[in-house]
Length: 225
Ligand SMILES: C[S@@+](CC[C@H](N)C(=O)[O-])C[C@H]1O[C@@H](n2cnc3c(N)ncnc32)[C@H](O)[C@@H]1O
Image (cartoon, rainbow, N blue to C red; front, side, top):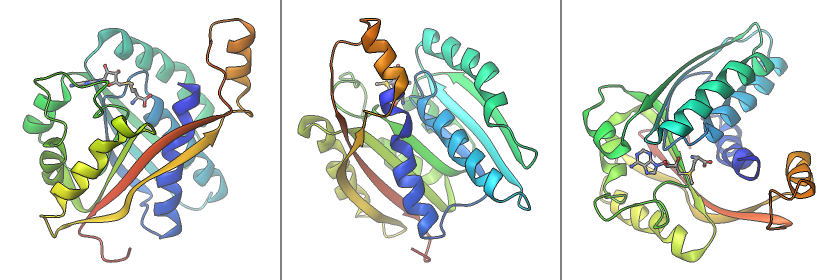
């Protein structure tokens, strides 16, 4: 979780720089695990809220995760983490649903400003009955206009292929623009004290200076970008 935590900041930063990140967002986090991307989003917005005390920020989040143990971790982290990011001008709601994302996306009625997934669609996570490449088509209908889809996957070629396949598929739908095509990037891990502590305690055995990942951003009907 610490190694993955800040990855979502890069696409968020891209959107912010292009003035395409709203201040009041309805957010769907698919395959949330312990809540990595959702809590990281909270942290990002907390900094924005502190820097812009005259503006009101709202995050109305829904996280979907199939493993009950992760759901429990996310709920328990919510109880403690929320207080460290909360400011007077940032309102946060969170619902955690223990569901399968492939069934959920098809039947859930919500309309979202931002849908994100991190490390869920690659071949390490999917089973033969999952259809990762078809999911963005379903998600397209879940997005408001304008709405944003952020996909994050590991950096290894076999894991990041899925992003290229999704890009090709969505190219058939003019309403969905690929505003950041799949690209790889690395997070430096040296500054994460939690990882250093984990290594000292001998509970993290891989020592890496950098953590490589891939990401892509698709926008539904936004002409500003
Ligand atoms: C590698 S973890 C990533 C967790 C988190 N998104 C992150 O980036 O740290 C993948 C997560 O996706 C969940 N997952 C995989 N397939 C799923 C599905 N079909 N429905 C719901 N959750 C799923 C797994 O249970 C796991 O928690």
